[in-house]
Image 1 (spheres, rainbow, N blue to C red):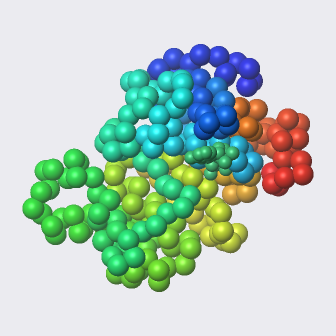
Image 2: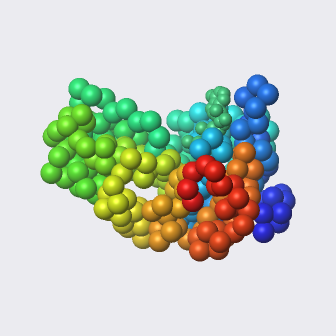
Length: 256
Ligand SMILES: Nc1ncnc2c1ncn2[C@@H]1O[C@H](COP(=O)(O)OP(=O)(O)O)[C@@H](O)[C@H]1O
Ligand SMILES: [Mg+2]
């Protein structure tokens, strides 16, 4: 399967299409000719051992830096190298693995600051309304009873909810979630997983990154596995778990 998906993709093959993305840092090829189509309405798992190039792929798509070569299409349009702010206005949001909310602002204010100014134009001057929208988002991500707290009063899972809230504040159609389950307990994984699944049911398309299958098996529709920046498998989550190439990639390292 990976041989077929590695061939050239069309701009309209998905909501987000990566065609032959390469990212080099000096002599290191972090992303190696990666071609991926994210279909509208799906939850795609993007899996690979630590250092495989998952976050770098995200960074090339969300405008943190341009890819060395290859093309990124969003909604059929070539958006290669488009800056982060413009990608957000197009409907692409992400969460960061290392996130730092503003420590001197409440949870609600942190979400309020992420509301996209462009999309808020019609609400200019309506402070009460932005406040209400931020509060609604806090409710949506399960922080309804903690929105007046400071971020450092939240447990780790609460911070992740806040990071998701900040992403949702930009009203995305596609959300890239980078390693949401790291550092979470079993019940927290399930609870966040349910939240992501509900968001999809409400119309969001999601790519969820993890370094293993933990928490992903029941959440995702499809998985793409990368190693050394290149795709090694693509398919249903159950198939991926049985795939000998995938199992080999994890030998002696992370647990699949
Ligand atoms: N800004 C950077 N400069 C140099 N090397 C980097 C940079 N970002 C990532 N890398 C390297 O690229 C590879 C892929 O990293 P990363 O995308 O963070 O992996 P993952 O998210 O899958 O754990 C690693 O070898 C990492 O050290
Ligand atoms: Mg990473």
